[in-house]
Length: 145
Picture 1 (cartoon, rainbow, N blue to C red):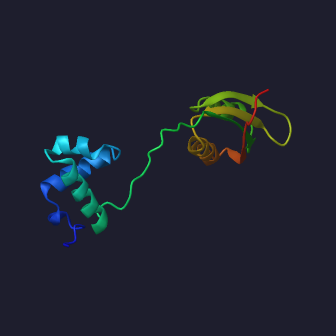
Picture 2 (spheres, rainbow, N blue to C red):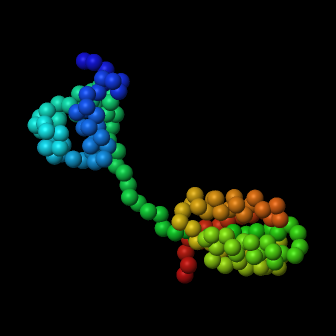
Picture 3 (tube, rainbow, N blue to C red):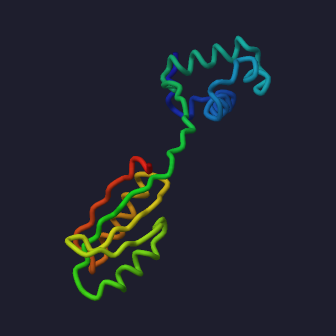
């Protein structure tokens, strides 16, 4: 059997078959055959050969799971004074719900709502890049009772 891993060795029908399977690997051989102008058994044979040769290495489920928005509190230590310019710049960041100015070791708490943990990480990193800000720490809100 010739090695079908090389693109040159794939005929146009096999290329189209792979394209259709990439779009929806759950299509029946009958449905694929109708699109390709082949019988069900011819499609099954082609798929079997593509699997055997390693061109088709497996099938994957693509999940459509969306993460719920994440709310978090970001504690901020402001290095210099006055604090107001820094607090205003924090308030202007995307995803910020509220900025609370505090007395004590933590100068401010920023309440945020973002679409994912990745977005939270990016926001924390953006806050930490500000030269006027020292320590930054985030805490994800688990429950709002």
